[in-house]
Structure formats: C-alpha cells, structure tokens
Image (cartoon, rainbow, N blue to C red):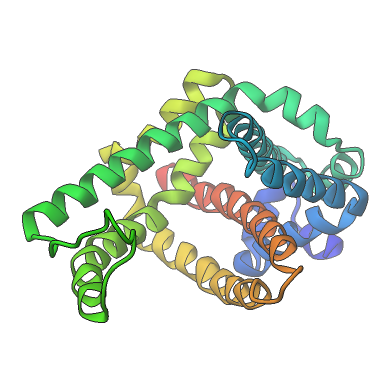
Length: 275
C-alpha cells in the first residue's frame, strides 16, 4: 500500500489516495491505522470495553464512565480524521501512528469531543421528539404498559412497529446520508462550542445541498454498503456468549475509524468540486 499511495507527486496523502482507487484506499488507510500500532489499538479497545462495562454500574457513576467512553471514541475519530486529512505523505502518516498514545489523544481533543457528545445527545432527543410527534399525528395503538411493561400480543406489536418503523427508518437514512459531513465538522473542531455546533450542522441547508451531490452519494453509499457487510458479521459474533461485548467494542472501534477516514476523503472530493 505504501508504494501505491506514494506514486503521485506534489500532493498530500489524501490527494494521492483519491487519485487512484479511492474506495479501496479508504479501507486501506483505515486498516493501516489499526495495524501499524497494534499495542495502541488493543489498548484503546480495552479502555473502551472497560469504560463501557463500568458505564452499566450505578446510574450516576455509570454516566461518568459513559461520558468518558464517548469522549475517548470521539477523540480517536478526530485524531484519525485529522491525520489522514493533514498528512503530507504516507511516511508521515506511518510515523504518527507508530508513536500515537491514547491518553495524549484524549487530553488534546477532550474539549471538542465533549462538545460533540453533548451535541449528539441534544440531536438524539430532538429525533425522539420528532418520532413521538409523528407517531402522535398518525396514531399509535393504545397499549397498556403499566402492569407488564411489554406489548401484550403479536397484533399490538405489529401495529406499534408499523407506525414507528417508517419514520424511524427515514430519519436513520437521512442521518446516514449526512453523517460524514457532520463528522468532518467534528474532526475540524478545536473546542467545546465548535464540537457542539458541528453536530448542529444537521440543520444546515448548505450541508444538505452538498450531501445531495452525486459524487458524494456515490462515494458514501459505496463505503457504507461494504461497511454494512462487515457489521453483519459483527452482529453474528454478538450472538456468541462471552464474545458479544468484545464483538461490540471491536465492531464499533473499526466502524468509527472507517467513518472518520471516509468523512475526510469525501470532504476532499467535494472540495475539488468547490474550486
């Protein structure tokens, strides 16, 4: 891979990666990041696993560990995104990965990562409100959950899903479409406010106009389509006892690295068109 990405002259690493086989190079750069410093990768995944498990403890204490886990995850996304976007060549990329330390990354990007985390929380609440409003307008079947806390029969389950599933699926597809552009905004954030408002770009008309360019749609769904096949394999591993938590962390970590690399790659594609 090093030779393939270094053939072009007078351009940054990301430009070389896009010049030939951009989809393959997205996955290659993601894999290089994961494999060049295995100790770093295993350490971060172990920390994510531990923090996630601690997040399931007492509500107040668990919430702190959940926030820390999210901050570490987002910090890693910022780091790999900036590394791919700013590296001059593959040699610089390799050198940076080999000396990477999780604690340094978390410390450096803690503020924007917490801002982005809060932004995602607010956006998630807005999604729930929207889904609830749509369900209220359409009409959700009345279900008594107070005594059993479960849907009483198969008919009620199907009625409930028929009302909720469609708006939820549409919101998910819209989110999937615009996610790389929001991710790039997060990657470029330097502080809490920038991290928070990067997420709020979900409501930016300019961002949505860029998301409906054919070059963008083609790239995003090509990468996500292949990525979904990988996630199916992860979900299958999650059914195996004692392996499920590890599969979740492994799947999540690899996915977030791929998403960050894809975000800066497709942003660069749009930058070419904006010139």
